[in-house]
Length: 496
Image (cartoon, rainbow, N blue to C red; front, top):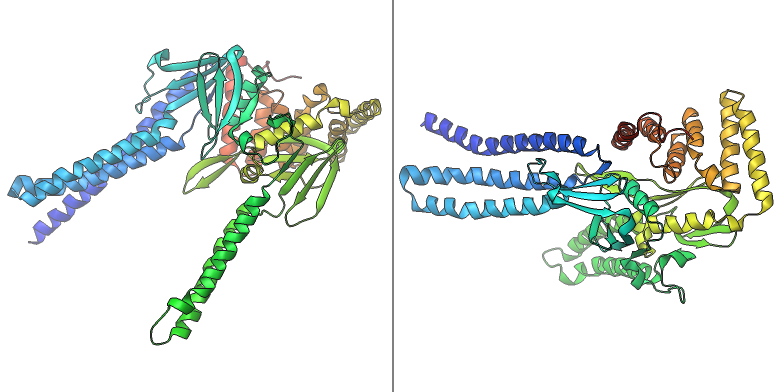
């Protein structure tokens, strides 16, 4: 009897462990073939992928495999004893495995598309789970000259539809290097309008100008704020009142107080989460683009205003947030000034403003870099600051670098001429040398908006991310730099 029990435990352990082991082997095999395929495609251009759906799909398939393994136990009982109940359980279990397998395949589908940003266009290659190179017959290509518009689609994680005269491609915002991909496409098709599904939901559209580009202010919806506060207030009243009418028993008063206390604790947790998401302390609730200034107001703070000649960079600084080990991309907007803390605005607040961080960044950057808002004296002052910065850099000391970086930042802010903007990498290098890696990241990002093929800027960005303990972002930046160097050689796309 003990031997039979031992055999039963071994059998049951095997049907649990073997599917998990096989799924792990499958996962590692897929990742190896995927890496080889990506390396081969990198010869054509920058490669962008969405790995999380593939991981989720394999996990779902593995869960189904575990269920199928457990179903083998009644199958063996049926074969040995002819038990009809065991046969029924065995046969019913396989459709459940099929559901898991189908769900895994559907979940993995977005991860089975590889985006390649090529010199003449963008290509999407569809691959199977095996990731074997099946040639270009599964490719969809959009040439740069055929792009007619970009449109943000309504999606839980965000997506941009690239429309051409021949076809449409939908790029999820969770793609690795999505910012660089979209920036490259928009530079290649500068006249293609950028629209959004939110355009038709604006409360007060600019008369005669329905496009988002004409907005001069962004503000959160007052109705949405009132609804959020009203829901929280109604929930609080409900949690305070219901125990006094519904609680019964030997000590209803005591039990009602207990339930009220539990309800208050629950409400405090919910209100804290809602406040962190909907009412962030330092993020603007109103952002206004005035003729010579940038003004904003926060829900729990005062009004702020900065002169346009104090704005250094307006960048989208991609971040990666991990939820239960799965990476998710965020695209916060960061506006830096010649002094003081930067102004930050995340994806959630941008959605509350019926826009996205990218659209707000485009509008603010266009407003700030409009040289018609500058005077001849501004250009002369910026040139004088640049000359003084060159003298400070000749000092070759930390104090000289600190003074030089301050002067160069002010020169860019006073007169953001395109030639001066393409030299933002040098300011980023100075920040990195001074150990100011947060500022260096903003400068490198701003430079890459104009020079996306500058491998040295990508290497500097990777070094700053490494210093900030962001190995994930540093790895992506390093891979981008390596692809550029392999494609162009060490002497191209580097020197100013």
